[in-house]
Amino acid sequence: MGAIYEIGALCALDDCLQGLDFNACDHYVGVSAGGFIVAGLANGMTPRQLCEVFIEDLPNEENFDPSWLLKPAWSEFGHRLQRLPGLLGSALWAWGVQGKPLTNAFERLGAALPTGLLDNEGIHRHIEGLFSREGRSNDFRQLRARLTLVATQLDTGNAAPFGRAGWDHVPISRAIQASAALPGLFPPVEIEGKHYVDGALKKTLHATVALDEGVGLLLCLNPLVPFHASENPRSAKRIPSLVEGGFPAVMSQTFRSMIHSRLALGMKHYERAYPDSDIVLIEPDQRDAELFFANTFSYRQRREMAEHAYQQTRQMLRDRQSELAPRLARHGVQIDTAVLTDPTRHLLAPARRSAHAYSRHAGALATRRLHATLDALQDRLGLAAASPRQPRRIP
Image (cartoon, rainbow, N blue to C red; front, side, top):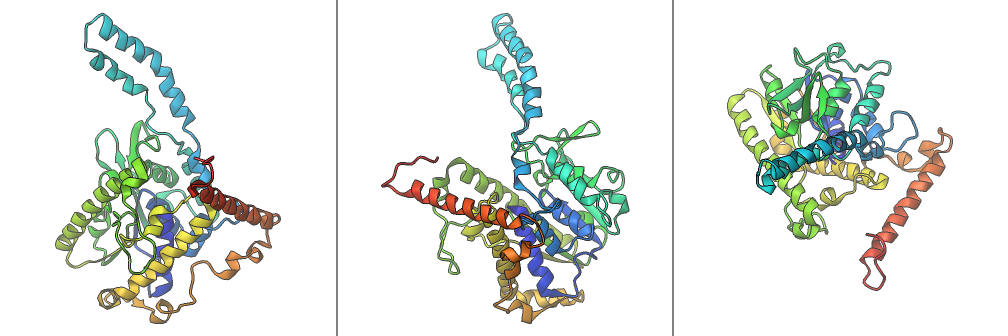
C-alpha cells in the first residue's frame, strides 16, 4: 500500500508545485517500499511513468505485477525443513539424556521455522531488468544524483546505507530488495555473507543522510500512519473498531503506531538540529478508511487508491497552503493555485480508463474485460458472504 500512496501523492505534488523537478533533486533517500520510488526518480522516471509501471495494467514488460510478491518462499521452506531432523534429534537428546526441561529442550526447534513466507527474489530480478534499460542504471555510481537506500543489518541492528561510499557497489535492485524485506513476510536478504531486513525497523525517515549534506528543502512522504476509528467529516465511511478486523488489523495498527511515534520524535529532532533546512512532511489523513481497507492486489482498487491519494494530497495542499507557500517560496517553489483548485483534474485521465488507451496493444481489450469480470465477481462474492440469507461458501 505504501508505494501506491506515495505514487499518487508524488504525482499530485508534481502537478501542483511549480519550480520543482522531481528528476533533478540533489539527493534521494528511500526506505522500505519507498526505495523503489526514489530509485525510479533517480533513474529519470517521472512520477507519471512510475504510475504507469506500478498502478496501470498496461501490457508491457515494465508493468508491475503484484503476483510477484505472492510466491511462497520455497527455497527458505526447504532449507528449514532440512534442518528439522537434526534439531529434533538434538532436542530429544537434551530432554531424554541430559535431563533438561521439555520446554527448554524443544526451544531449539524454533530454528526450523522459516524466516519469511513469501519469496522476494522477484523484486530484485524484475527491478534489475527495469533499470537495465537504455538511459537507466542499476549501479549507484552511474547515477547523476545521490541515491541512498537504507536497510537494517540483521546481526547488529545497524542501518545499512546502500549507495553511500563503501556501500555503492551493491546493485540498486538488490538494495531495494533488502530495504523492503519486512521480517516475517519476506526472508532476510543475504549480501556478501551478511543479512539485511527492512530499513524501517531502525528508523522511519533516515533523513540525516541528506540533511548532513546541507539540503535546504526536504520533502518527506510517509504512507504509514495509525488510524483513528472516528468520523471523518469529508467521508461517509467510518473505520469500525479495529478489533473486529482480527489479528491482521491489530498488528497493522500496532506497527503503524510504532513507526509513526518514532517519526514524530525524529521530526522534532530534525527541526532542532537543522534549523536552516525546511522539512515538509506529507502523509495521509489518519481517519482515511479507504486507504486502510484497500486491497492492493486488486487491479481496480490499486487505481482507485492511487487516485484517492492524488486527490487527498491536493486537498492537503489546499488546507496547508498558507503554511507551506512561504516555506516553499524560499526555495523557488510555488504552489499552482489553478491546478490545485481545478475540480476536473485527475491522476488517471479518462483516456487511460478506457479501452482506447490500450488499442496499441494486441489483446489488451480482452485483458481489461477480464479484470472487469473478476472485479465484478469479487463484488458479488463479497455481497453473498455478507448476506445472512445465503450460505457462506467463500471464506
